[in-house]
Length: 336
Ligand SMILES: Nc1ncnc2c1ncn2[C@@H]1O[C@H](COP(=O)(O)OP(=O)(O)OP(=O)(O)O)[C@@H](O)[C@H]1O
Image (cartoon, rainbow, N blue to C red):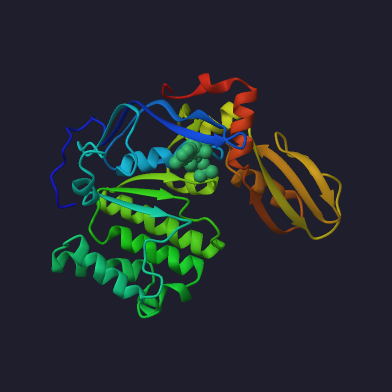
């Protein structure tokens, strides 16, 4: 990163202090009647993210994730509280902040639909006034690591979802941002594309110290990329800590699916338990916070194993269980 840090070590690079966002919504309730209602999308959230951290920001639909990200980019102005990114107030200095942040919305593209990919990059080169040498260097690096060389002359509308996503990630990084907001970057991607995107983000964070805030419904994104996860629901921060702690708080389980050479009685490998058997295939539930490797080794030791896969719990289920157990007190950090 070329710019000097704005914050002293230990201070938050992204700082939210009791941030709120209230929307006024008007709903037609009769021929001439309209009802005014307030939606508290973000309800007093406080957190700090240090420079170089990679943090997952998760929650059910409508929890307030996108609203938070929009306030962090300056698209939306908070209704209350204090918010700073790299020492900048996003709503007041949106243009200055734009030089420091990159944003990828998985469901939308920032690329020009009808233009070849490279033309979008050339336009961004000018829009962000990126020095030529820096643009070249960043572009070459992204093209190599995101495997974009054969795609540069292809119009964006002809790219597959996975290709387009890699193109979008490169676009967000050409100006060397210190912070990257990723909103569902692996949504709809196949296993190979997901792995490529995750590997790239990991390298980016390790080599450049880019601070990453990641919104996703895919727990594997979090597991592979983030040491810390924040859970938001109804606009409030419900959990802030390690993913393992979240699993433990919700008592959530993963499922190991094993294909055996032949039909066998249910395998006994506590604490895992067989939850389903269909011919030579068995499903074993085990605590999500534990590694699958020792379990697989124990099964392979005593059964003729042909194939296996691990199914992750979905985020909604983990959060629902966390509520059911009233376990938010298990958070490693204090949630507001
Ligand atoms: N511009 C708006 N006007 C009125 N209400 C809004 C607006 N934007 C969001 N909301 C409401 O604020 C709440 C939070 O929405 P938000 O999009 O932040 O949730 P989310 O966590 O990103 O959900 P998802 O996972 O579905 O994208 C929802 O109730 C939503 O309907």
